[in-house]
Image (cartoon, rainbow, N blue to C red; front, side, top):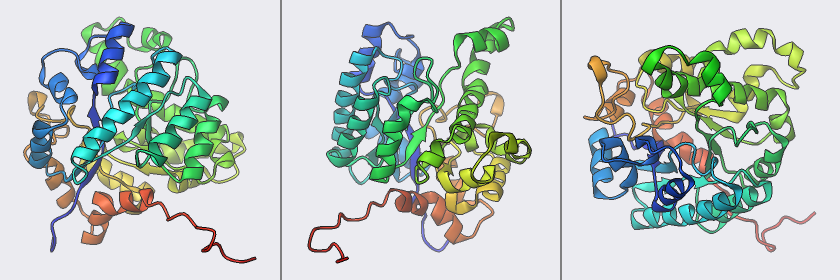
Length: 350
């Protein structure tokens, strides 16, 4: 390429002190993915300083859009979630303020309370300057298409900011039915191996078929993990879509309301498929740090972004330089560009 790509990663995970302490108080699972322990994942999650910057340099990432590790504050008691989300967002804002050239952040949202969720998004965007929010699908037994979320979706649409969704572990009956009785592999299968993606992908379809994007046609959603499975079955699902009485073809919802990133799975096949379905003008970039950093079990090559792999994967993609720049940073910049407010003097006369 003629010029070095500027790469912005939009799914770069952190556990800030407010959330870590809230997990401890709530008796949440003491697992590395929530920042517990002394292993590399837990240590890297809790750190947002020089070591993280060094790892970003090693990956080849210029800017990291930070977000809380799944499920954010969405499994905390409602009163705790509201307070912890606010404190967590203040702590995220401090990290960004210390290195605005390298960090941005998605807001944590207390989806347990419709009014508080909308208010915290408004505060995070208006006061803290966040470009959007990270959500985690289900809140308790309420899925992403539940009407309680309409106030939040309306606020996001009005503010013109995207909502990035991240999966979380399926409900216990699903785990019991599909992932139990097969030994230790059941736990990862229910989670980051595959169960996560089915869980969230079905919620995306529910959002479409329940009319979320008909009520909020300008709402923009970011889907990680190459579209959470459903993208690969879009043609097949679309065959049955007439039964859903959609206002638009199913594929149109994905191409007009969704943006897709790979979350650190550096698969050339997934990359090509996503570009064919969505177009490179609806693709973003992410590394899913630290879960993809420095791990290559059995030599498996596709989920390790260290040693410059995050950068070389995109630089070597079978796209034009313009398309690579779109995926690397320009699509994100277009998505999060907010027009200057129109003042009374500037408002056109009727």
